Length: 218
Length: 218
DNA sequence: ATGGAATTTCTTGTATACAAGATGTTTGAC
DNA sequence: GTCAAACATCTTGTATACAAGAAATTCCAT
Image 1 (tube, rainbow over the protein chains, first blue to last red):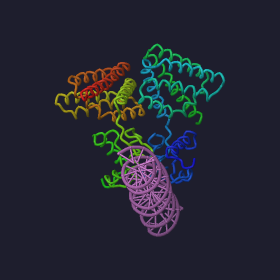
Image 2: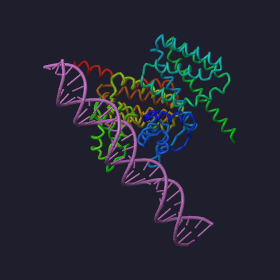
Image 3: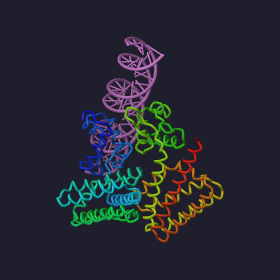
Image 4: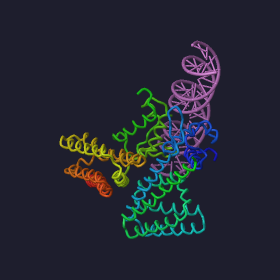
């Protein structure tokens, strides 16, 4: 890009954080970034504030802004909150979802399964994402949808570890189908509870992985 | 203040929006604000970005930032989302709340009732706020708590209209007590459902008010 | 040699100058 | 008189200069 907009810079920085180029506690030097993106400090500072607002970094006055990767505790809380948000979306969607959206969910599930069969990790994640996004949308509540999307996006880098558990995918697919069935029959409670557990399990699995890594490191 | 920090400016602007000095669609002129706060445009721009990030204003490129008061539809969605957040907090709090916090909830209820009896509107709102904040905190989930606080704060100016309904307060208090009882006995479902309805009713009432005002205006 | 204080350097925060786009007005042609 | 185009003005966006506080280094005293 010739003269990147602050919002583009913020997105690029986000990508750098997600891709692991910046780790927890790293300071984002304004001058360095200004040179890197070929702009002055002003738009860089705007982009940094955007990062701070999104919770990806924290600002210490007169010190600078620092990358703030969530620790194990906060991550668990994020997964738990995600589970609650999704449950809420499912609950509301149960009485609002359109037939077309139900078909979309089933289509997404088909693609998920196909991707699993083909060993296509990217395909799986994309289809899985579509599945969840459709439910957010069908909550019929743009505020809730936006919050769910935000947290979902934030947790994206941490969901990948799920792959490590053999057999989890099959169960995951079964849960998806239970959710669709509940939504089709308008059963709000089952849809909500199933989806809540479905997401919460990801948090559990992640927690187990963290624990095992921690143990292995010692 | 001598040289207000951008964050202080943002808070002040927020107050001006909540107090009604700025209405929907008003443009926040950088130069005017700079003179008003006795600083240059730079810290003003930072404060404005903060407002945009919090959803209170929207930025149109090369046009400026404009106050964006939520319309009736978005307000209903915000109340609905708030109800879901509170239900989630209550659900989690049911198995995590401390005895001390339960006492705090009952104390808050006592103050609520006393304020109602004394016709002390401010006292009522403060005690009511404490009640809800304790539940957020006792969810044991800082992420969820932060989201709930954010939305609660955002809806603050719109909750006041509740006063208009006679008899609502007594029912509201009864709902509070049902919630406390459910939390004390660890009944997550009842706590969640009661609190959800408790908040959702506020949205309903608000909607009715909006509709009546709309009708009256024609 | 080590602890501490002063100074130097480096970084953030603020002000101002400049660039570029958007809006509003004036002027001219039909 | 009306429409359109050019121009003037105003506002946002960016760069840079300057101020102020924090960290690091150096220097001195013990």
